[in-house]
Image (tube, rainbow, N blue to C red):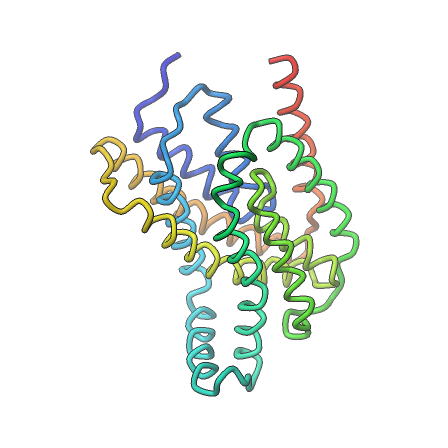
Length: 273
């Protein structure tokens, strides 16, 4: 069966990005596995950037009030040379501390990972391992809030975020796992993970987008990019809202189970498919 038109591929992959980017199940794992399983061609880095731009828009839209408060707090921090006064300014510093390890690792190691650490086998094993870690961390979650985090704890969350360079890890899953291990409530771990993702994803989109300047896509690919970005933004926002509402009383166990089944399924497909 021949692949569908690029616009249809764009919508479907954008929907997958929107659903999986915020859930702790790894968008990269699904975006690698789905085209491979269906026999679709890889649409390129430019298309990948458009999908992440869509989910970044979903994040900024959902947290627009808090992002505004934190942006003003960041301005006050700069004016006072980094001396925080109040919860919002302290939260900004926690986000910056947690974002630093991932940003440095992404800048230094991204090319290495793209060249040497790829393939469905790796995605399957990484997804399986992080599924087990997520189930373990869910049992460690407590009632602590982000406002009570220490700088050391924020740095540990940032170190977990470095693991997201491996395809199949899930950036949100790694940071939520670390947050719950440190005693954060499930919803607070998710909130801090989402806020930390804004500078990381924005930086990655700008960095990778700048590297692609001058590579204007063909018209059919451009249409696929627009369709994918819109799908990832609209579906991502709805999924994020539902996920955060679920975490008010739910656990991460269903997502951990899904990751284990997904990883085992890929391994079986590689072995016998």
